[in-house]
Image 1 (cartoon, helix red, strand yellow):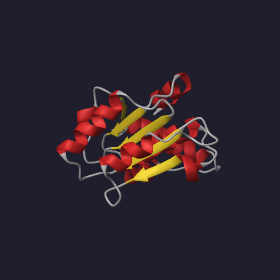
Image 2 (cartoon, helix red, strand yellow):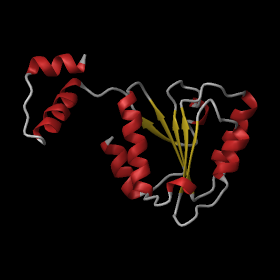
Image 3 (cartoon, helix red, strand yellow):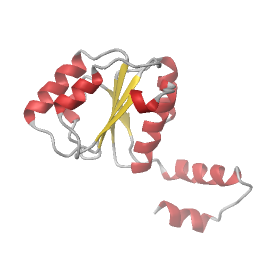
Length: 158
């Protein structure tokens, strides 16, 4: 995630594909991107699609709207499992020629969007090494003046 944070300070890409196996890191990555966009009017400039409301047409239509009162629009595809081959083609075409003021974040828990991997910014959400996790846990608790035993850390990480 440190890599994503530094990349976001250098340049905002139009499409991020979050892929991996750590659900906490999916959320952390999404929140980092949201924060970097500084969207002040999220009700107008943010759209979230999941299996209940997703279609390639609705997604692309939403991507082609310009932001109101902000520099960017944020479109989130959250854990989509149903996508047809025609929809894949349409989405790939959009990603190849995106609207520069729209940022798409794809939370690809189900590996349905790997077909985009050559045309988007990949963000790995694979599990962290144990020593990194231990440091994070210890540091987070230290912020609140708390300590944790190695045994407790081990049971949290499993």
